[in-house]
View 1 (cartoon, rainbow, N blue to C red):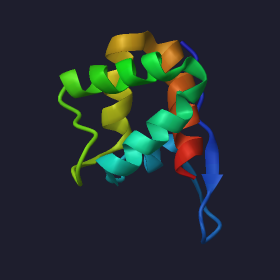
View 2: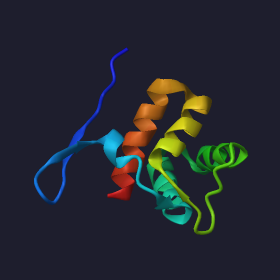
View 3: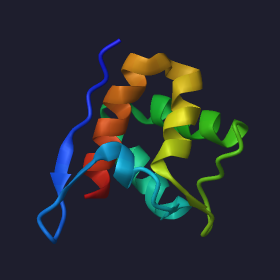
View 4: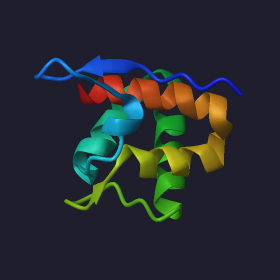
Length: 97
């Protein structure tokens, strides 16, 4: 299986993979907004279903609870599989930038 990791340059000029960045905690409110923006193209019903699926998996996207993108990816992978999750995570990362 081919795994695609993009490289990003940080402030001091070194590069990090998305996996390195995916361990940092992000507030659930910020994650919810990013997920909603990233899945906007799917329509409101599907976007809401994704948020509901994550909440059923124990990822509450309200309040100030913090999650890493790795936790979001793991939740999405169980619902969508690897390929769709990779695409969704790319869009979520862009929404967070």
